[in-house]
Image (cartoon, rainbow, N blue to C red; front, side, top):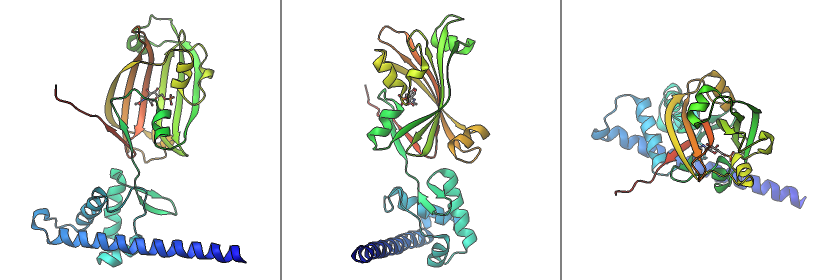
Length: 274
Ligand code: 16G
């Protein structure tokens, strides 16, 4: 009986906290929305665009933390005295931008983003572990074959050279975050089955962990197949990254093409004057 009573108390307490939090957030949003309506500098005649700006502002000012839930459409339209169509339109735009995410049946949340520094030569596994997330790979391909003309050019290999090929979806917890195709000379990685979750861990064991890399980053939209694998809408923003990594002696050790989800990743570089 005691256990049931304490469980009931805890869940009751959670509900009170959630209720308090939602009404606090509604107030913060309503205040910001009103401020924007009366601010001549941010003159915006359309209500859904004003609401979009209000939500963006309170997220950027960290009044709401990533991962937290937004009040329901009904509560927002009530608190802001706006139609549900307007609220829905404001939210839909921010979901498309990647600032908010919607989980079926659970509601709308402030998107949690992964900040990846650009200046360190780290692996996906290390990046995620550093953030306390559990990395995982799902393989579609782990084979040895002859180098293609494009790969031969990119890796400075002669035609006919054997390479190990990995094609996988990279997960953080249970969320797909990126798709990667990696090519490694078979002289470095003779058996691709040696890669369980992490390519760099396997290369480290073989004494061939990359020491230097060149990376090219481009924006693009995800096609039907990529969007399906990454559980996002077709045409969503993606970051297309090519990495060529080298050993100390200058040999290319990896040529990887990745598609990272644009709604989750922030690539950050530190810049110095000379
Ligand atoms: C990162 C690298 C990728 C590398 C992989 C190794 C970028 C843009 N790409 O995803 O080139 O192959 O890490 O990760 O950072 P792993 O050791 O976990 O397999």
